[in-house]
Length: 287
Image (cartoon, rainbow, N blue to C red; front, side, top):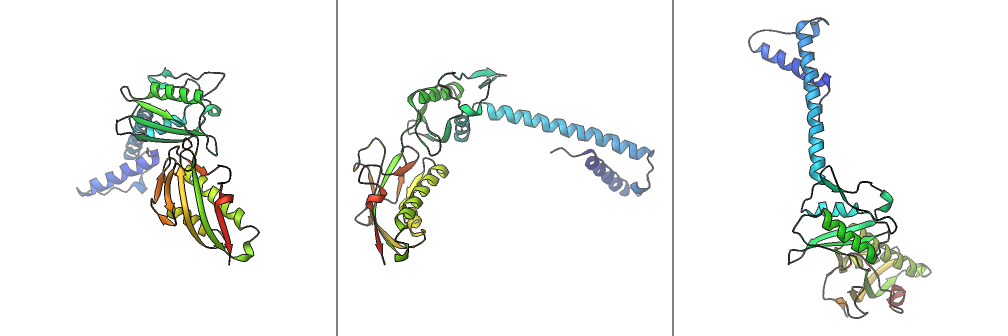
């Protein structure tokens, strides 16, 4: 970061005093008049030094800007670019080469629809770009996915295969016994379900395409005011494409068989099959 003229001047004066002292010459800058020759020389060099540092900072900033906007095969770079994807059903958004950089000639914040993105590399060395939109998350429409695919193919590294996907939320089914203080009877079901939904929403935002852990589900329920204890009897997660009952078991008969589940869509909500929602499968026991 560039120093001010005053800082540069003080640095030069201090060094001048130090170096002259090594050969037995004492210099006292506090006695310099405004017309003192050494004072004018030091200040002139200070101005030149400050201007040089300002130009150097500007040059570094310009180079970093070019580097940040240039195609690079890093996951954070791809993720950042996907958040800048623009879509309009009535006004197609085309990437153009602007000063040697592929970008939108006009940036419209209202057209940036992607709110979640995760980038992974498959075993076949393809780059999978998983995205969602809105808040809470939902899948992109078919036209939006097509446009997003064209976008990353245009700005991405030549020779790399990018695969853009956007799916409806995964579902989690929880059958559990929850013991609670009797005085909370009127609100316990609502507060526990609200806590689980908030937990799933926050998890999707903070760890999109990450894992959901059995231990975290237990901790979420036990943290609700009024809850004394909980036993997860059965827990199953599935992608939206799978039928209810055909997912992956995490807990069977109160035994943990798989401690974590990797989200397929990147985000997860409670099971929405009629008769299998949290309100149907959570058993509350007063004590």
